[in-house]
Image (cartoon, rainbow, N blue to C red; front, side, top):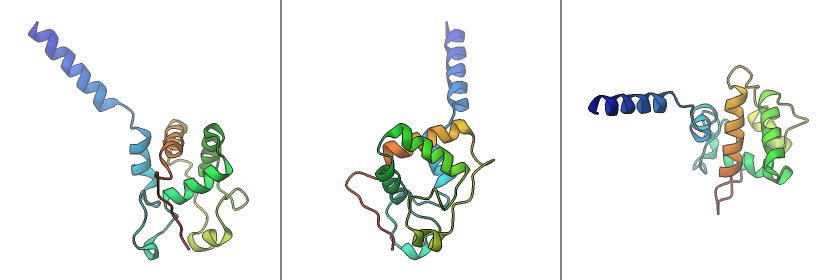
Length: 130
């Protein structure tokens, strides 16, 4: 009986270790390198718009989750100033987001975009960058 328990625990731990990262973990590892996840204290140090500001614009243009996720996935892989939802001065300040082709898989992008829609902007928080 003890052997069966040990085998079960070992298999369970292997499954946990091999589990795919969650949308939140992917955003933290792949997106927060440039986009802050919280309201910034010092906007002079930003290299990209904060996530909550990005998602505010996305949700204003695409309130339906499926449409928002489709937009995010397309924009992340094929960004252009014509597709950009932010004001032109934001692109002037931060530049156009570089394509993430080769940096993120389609499955990861599905998880990232879905989690972003569900999680941002943070409830009761506004993000305004001048």
